[in-house]
Amino acid sequence: MDWLAQTRRAHPTVLWPEAKSAIMVGQSYAPDDDSMALLQQKEQGLVSAYAARRDYHDVIKGKLKQFAQWLARETGEDVKVFVDTAPLMEKPLAQRAGIGWQGKHTNLVSREHGSWLFLGAILTVAELERDAPQEDHCGSCRACLDVCPTNAFPAPYQLDARRCLAYLTIEHKGQIPREFREAVGNRIFGCDDCLAVCPWNKFAAEARETRISLRGDLRLAPLAELATLDDARFRERFAGTPVKRTGRDRFVRNVLCAIGNSGDAALAGAAEARLEDNSPLVRGMAVWALHRLLDADAFAALKSSRAAQESDTLVREEWDA
Image 1 (cartoon, one colour):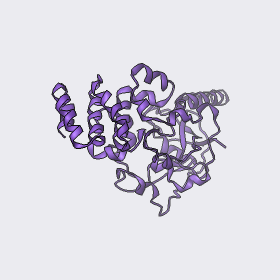
Image 2 (spheres, helix red, strand yellow):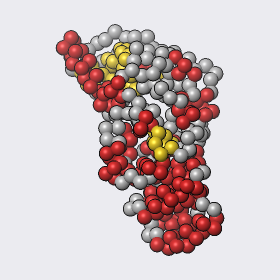
Image 3 (tube, helix red, strand yellow):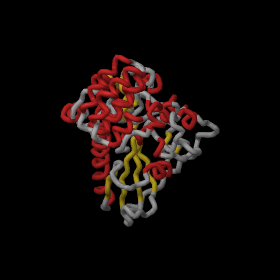
């Protein structure tokens, strides 16, 4: 089954103190490709498996609303639906409901679906029978911890988001810190490494919900093409997907970081074109990419002609660095 429903009485929460029970739902989004193998396609930009598709919030919320309406009719009690839209601890609740357990990478792991799960919740005032909680089945495995390219796990079950490539390429509004740029590789939105290597994924079948099917044109695309996106074309290309929320400037920043990691001097032209970009984020990362792709003399010549024209302090620091 792709669609799992488990119920458990929830503790009263600040979010809704009157709630007595929570129904937790997991939706598989297991990809049909090899996330780790795609990291080797250096001239292509890689988007995380959860985001290279229609925004799951819309699809899952629609399903949960149907379920919630039925529950409200049956119980006569109020209900509320949440899909990553409120400060609700979904993963601990899902573990208590028996859907899976929080693995050492801090994400939920299911015996049936591995690490590829979207979560949603229905809170209700109704008293519902509890399901048995799921026990931890990680054992001595460290695959997710050891694969992390930035060592973002200081210990099992602990994540330092400041080092996580998913955070740095999606949520982080400033420039990607220099110490993590090489580790970005060709990732331009998110990182799936700790999810992809989980041994429990061997039991996961490809997700069958057609409304959130993986789109190949979003999953992997030429970096040279993505670097040319202006705001309008970015919005058009990623409309209705999670990628849109990061904004064009941060996205192109990530693309230029991947260009710098590509090792392909032919992409230097795409980076140089972004030195004229309106966004300091984009211009700064373009400088870094060019420093990686050009030989010392070519970069020095470019710096001599361009750096003095730069008005932004942080971008000038990139030239000097």
